Each structure stands twice: as structure tokens, then as C-alpha cells.
Length: 210
Image (cartoon, rainbow, N blue to C red; front, side):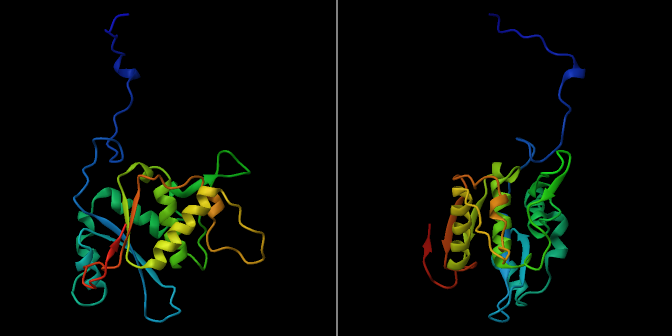
């Protein structure tokens, strides 16, 4: 068999794309994070905030009022990939990456996550992040997770085990916080997780765990 192959006419070649999701079209920064904050204004607070930054220690100081200026001044300089992940994390009900085919019509899709009263709960935000990491296009990126409180890591692992086992939620009158049965696949083992009790700046002096 000859190794020489006829080059197809230009009309049959795939259309060139500039999508940064394709191999070779995106340069990953040394560090860029999307993060989830939980308000401690009160023990019962369910208020959360999702953002992104190349400098987590500085950003947390800005959030807590120790430093001036915020995300607006640097938003246009963000890398494309984290910015899209951040937007989908903030608005999962609008993200095209978090939709499933409708049972009623093959041409329609429905969101995995509804815009309800629990959309800003920590449990929901962690579940949304899990779904994003499990599904394309983010499932194919070299992403890693670092938790700074044990509670958040426990929530993530509980979600992972449930999705991995394909467990169906029990029928109860109370609607579950997360639609785990709608997440079609688990996060790939290549996504590493770490519990870092040292805090964002490492100032607590506590140990890190893998």
C-alpha cells in the first residue's frame, strides 16, 4: 500500500476555527483560579460568591476590604477558559454546557440546574462545579481543585460517590438541593483534589492533605 495520499480539495477541508477550546489554540497561564466564597456574616448565611483571579491571596483581601479595587478593573484581561467556566458556574441555568436533551423533543434541551431559591447555596454551587468538571468542554482540560474547609471537600466527595454509583434519589415530598441523577457522568480521575487547611495565603499554619 502506498503511503502517499491524495490531498482533498479545499472545499472538503474542515472549516478553520479560532476556538480556544481546541488543541493548540489556547495558552494556559501558570495559575488562574475560579473560586467559591461563602459568607460568614451569620451562622445561617447561604450567601455565596463565584469569581476568578490569578492571585487568590490578594483577591480574598480585596473581598474582605483589606485592599481597594476589585475584579472590574482587570476583567478584560482574564484568560478565556476560566472566564467561561466562571460564567457557567454563576449562571448554570443559562449555560449551554449544562443542558440535557428533553424527553419530549429531540430538538430541545433543558437545563440540569433550575434557577430556584437554592441556586446560591454552597451545596448547589459545589454541585454545579462538579457537573462542569464532568462534562465537555471542561472535562478535557487540566483542571485541579483545592478545598480550604473540610465541609466543602466532604460535599464534593458525597456528590462524586452518588454520581459514580448512578443512585436514584428517594421519593420524598421535599425536593433535593441538587439534581444528582441528571449529571450523566462522573468527574475524570485525572482531576486532582486537595484539602488545604493552610488557607488561601497559607497563613493559618495548618497542614495540607492530598
